[in-house]
Image (cartoon, rainbow, N blue to C red):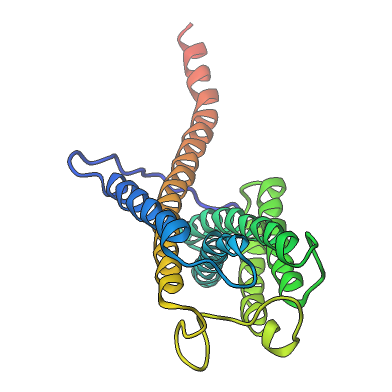
Length: 254
């Protein structure tokens, strides 16, 4: 089944551009967050300055989870309604989620080399995170090689729903199987953020806010790009269908 294309693209309205506002908010939060991570938060006693990777690693992982949560909701809505708008949202959020999860894995590897002495180990949390990255990378490959067909969109949506089930497993993996990865320091049964000194917690939350704003901005831009591509493809397809008729009419006048 061919996926119906979106035939309307909203023109940019004059006046205040809310995306430009997000750029400024994200830049201010990001700059302030880096200041807090480097100069405000204290040096960790056992890991020294290597621990400051934490202020990039955790926000990147958070945005990956947020993006895949959006993929989960949009994919379920697409499977239920078959509306192309939900598929576009899932597609855009999958791309962003894979990018930020890749950043989380790379920053975690750098952190692991400095603290554990190894770039990678098949630790339960690392393994389940790699599984998450792999599932959504496969989803993007399905879209890339399957084309804009309804079948590839449905398959990607199923992966978007199934892959999200891995996220609770990632969170619980360090509780169920003790390994090299440290225990959660923010989401704890003892209370939110009780595993961190206040300065570290505020530095982390500021960077999480900056990364979240960046996600919203990237998602809105990428979602609009995909909608524009859809509209352009539909227009080209319509042109190909009407061209023989126009050429035949032209021949008839000769």
